[in-house]
Length: 294
Image (cartoon, rainbow, N blue to C red; front, side, top):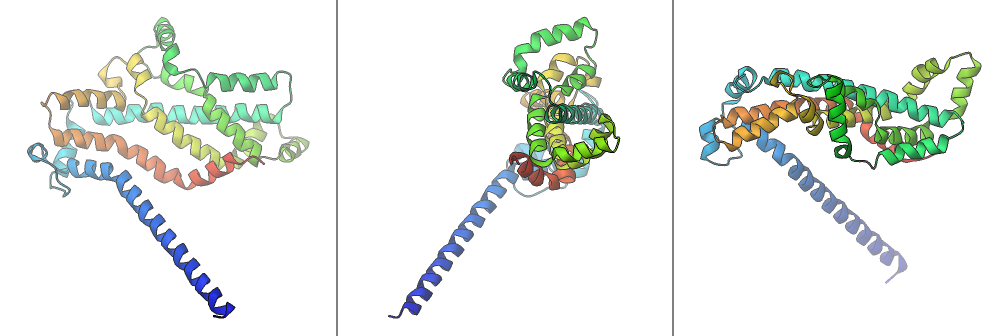
């Protein structure tokens, strides 16, 4: 057998092995995707079914009660108002996401750009704060909030979001990898003040990281149950996680309309999905650039 024949056979075997590995990888990815989306699909299916249909058993086929369940979910105020809960959660989540992203980026920018005494200590101290769970300071936080007469308001949920060590750390890593100091020096030479330099030059360069952290911060605040449950007292000011907890109690008692309950859960998820779809193109780019240090 000639060397050319052996080479062709080896090449054919290599291509077959490569194609087989690629096919197996695609099959695995499709399986994981279906597995990840199955619960969301099942939620949509249940939102189209009536209470009697849901009690009858499990099915993968949609029914015709979607509009009826939607009207009930939007108009039922026996326990709370879902539209009001959506508005409450959006106010808290959007405000928290904007504040935590902007001020964390400003802090990271200041520590990266300026040289001053205690710079390393401050950086280490901020990272050490990341190790302290929220539950450790919860009792003192609630006592302080009530002492300031801020309970049952959104300020204790929004203002503390300014201090976010994890967001600061991510922004710091991203700035180090993607923002040359020469650009900042050039802006200073041109007469730009520090705030204008940060807002007009640094922020556009940090757009992918901003988008990623806006998504993560928005979702974290949207899903936050622990702190709002300690602060918010009246049902008109409840955020969606508190409402979903009440819904679960209603579901366990078997007194509620299951179709309406599933529709309410679906409505609580839709804003998060919209935020992801709107900013998702920045996720891979932002995470990749932020993880690589120049």
